[in-house]
Image (cartoon, rainbow, N blue to C red):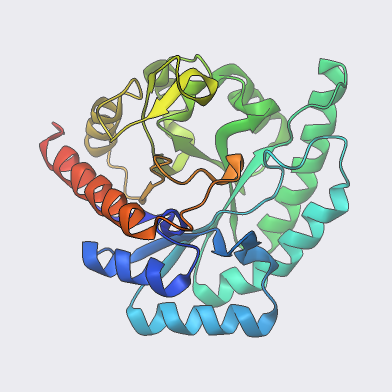
Length: 283
């Protein structure tokens, strides 16, 4: 079991992120926010070095860069050069931190006909994949916002049409629930392409934003226990990265500022709940 987490859900302060991971005894972090509205990928070289050195002293490895590339904030109508520039900036940093995976998505639509949306997504991901392949890194497409996140058929079509060994999958256990998809069926369809796993879980709740409420792993419709058991059985050796979304939800503009004590408690409880689930999931 290799556990990591989006510790910016504890705090946007990197010292507090490190503290929470050390409390769990976990050696991995997935990087995202490192300040109020400040993404790790946007750090200057000096800022990057300061953060890298803190993590290195703490014995914490960056297991993935939770980038902004093609994500929920970057629609298909936006400038592709923004993503090219971000990838170009972080690739040497990934090599320096020994990180192979950068999380991407596949551009939410912005009114284009479905065929045009698909074609432009594939064109962009082919170019990004060529860059990644030349630099020995993996673009991990998360089953989230964008054309390839619409379901397993779109995900597999994207992999086939891009046709690059540098494009693999990050499977998020909670996302299918909030998109009205079957988490187990989705997972089974794409299992062979998964290189990284995000742990989230949700239940339907009409009073919650979007009609779904985040819960602890194994308590919702994400089939977390079944998926973990199958990953164990089939020899998955990648990381499990916690993304609770219980108090902090980055894409909704909510972070832990002002409630960091509670956010830390939730994150630690979430991690321990997953550890217990993992050890009791049948292999």
